[in-house]
Length: 532
Image (cartoon, rainbow, N blue to C red):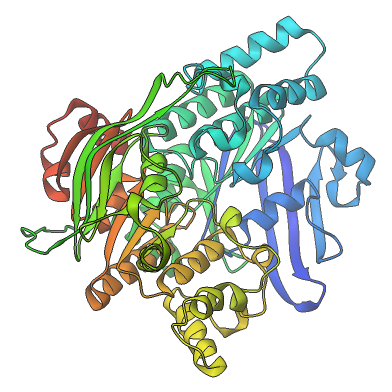
């Protein structure tokens, strides 16, 4: 039987910074991708996964990086192709879906126009053919049910919906290879399942090769045929999926798999602590009218929410994209107001807070957002980002004390003093999110609203951060409202879990009861999706 020929072959790929050429951040990496296969790349944040994917399409800034080795595609070394010819390969033959969709979508252009422009560039000028393919993919990705999607801007849809739009645009040219860099990070488990099934179907029908980059071992195990495991830019192990998961050779691989299978059971005792946050009869409406003068609010984003958060507890908020999770966090943080109902922080109605009391509220209630790139100032160093709040709220005033506190915060999130002078663009996605977590705890808050706070982190870093959050909760008597689409994460950290569906609470109970004996059909569906 004739051996398969690879469609893409990476040979001895090495990447380093020009300012530090002796330290390789990708070191002698070699692998092959065959036609019509799904090849997984697993690695922690900072392992070099994204650098490898970006080097394939020559997307790295060559003023910053030195790249050596071969990337062979259709008989050519892509590293040696000039910019005009690489543009013919990008999108047309090798497409890519990035980790952070909000940074890839044009914030000033409506969704419909962005999708159409992508198809006109890569597909054809046959508008009927373009429309048919777009409608097919909209239906496949579950976006066809969103009212006026074409008229919305990226910031008006959820992170999960943004990622699905990016997937539709990437498939516009029917590429031979699709590189997916954490494509389901921002999606809840049911939508993850749908996207994975769509990709698997496309892989077969279109003879598509997929490079699936992820920190999520559960997804890679179910999705890929062969995989490669990276650590600090070096290959630890690679081979067939089944062999690696059943009999891993390397210690690091065994540790990752052990973390994947580890099931931490939490027992929740009746909470007799005081309420730190109370939500009463909360409603939020949005207008879907195209008229600027219409006052019609015909979409109910949140409907009659009632719940409490107690001192020292973590309340998990679970729901699919579009369930109202982010709208809820925005109201609790006073980013926007509710249309009716009340929110109380320590018995004070937050809608009436102003002046000094409002400053105190913003000091004591902090947030960790889903997209770290959008919440960090690109022009500030790590030290400046972490010290800014400490200075503003006058928690510490001495320069030496502030710097010591900043170094301590970095240590808390597994970063060291060498990061002080770095800028956000010099950090990986996981490192950016850990920086956001460090900033949130810098002001010694009482309540932290975590909006997908660990979704961008690999599984081992997720566990580290969750352990840190649990430790801080006990030491500082912190409370968390932990918003996530990842039920496995909620199980590790939440004492109680609130399940949202289309803006309504369908179930609220202890984490143990939710997972052992869910009552609502929707909750059962979410939990069953974990086992697909």
